[in-house]
Length: 264
Image (cartoon, rainbow, N blue to C red; front, side, top):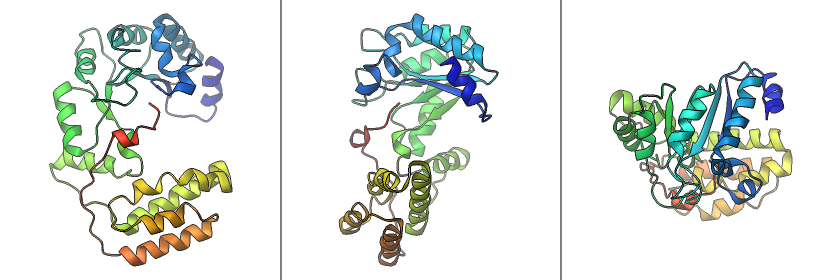
């Protein structure tokens, strides 16, 4: 991990963030991600090695603990702060919970209000609307909020939250033209990053989220996940714009349980 931080430093990022929160089986069975919560000494050694190897700020994301009987986030926060991390993001579930049930922010609030803690504390878990973001920010006094699943297929949520906090008003939902433009951007980035076919295949799971709320969209979604070239996808997207131009989207409602495939 120390060597990885040195490699990353070469491209001059703003910070190095260590994800000690990922709960998925293929990660934790290797002793990585949230599995490190079972050995806080190891977590401290790993983080310290990274912090010593780079001049960049080092931050950490993790969870409340491994399971209900080992919620050790208060100890974790103090020990990681003591070795020099610059911020801590906390997901309000244990690893055993995965993404089930409601995130518990009470321990996040306890960490933030611990008089020993002076680094920024970010809360994470179940924030899916501007109202909830503002409510949790005020209730738990966190320095910021991290959003995962609610941003999948809906990157507009960040501006919606910022605007609501600043003005108390809601932005209009993105139009079909705006949604399709972002789909195209996402597709081209995916192809550039992963190659043509892997990039196209990677996008297939995202169309549902980008186009959620459109009536009778199944026919077009089926086309999007079966065509095999960027040009064909562009044709389907153009057809969607023609058919749904002027459609007024309602404010988004998110089924967080159905979107529990992200890692964090």
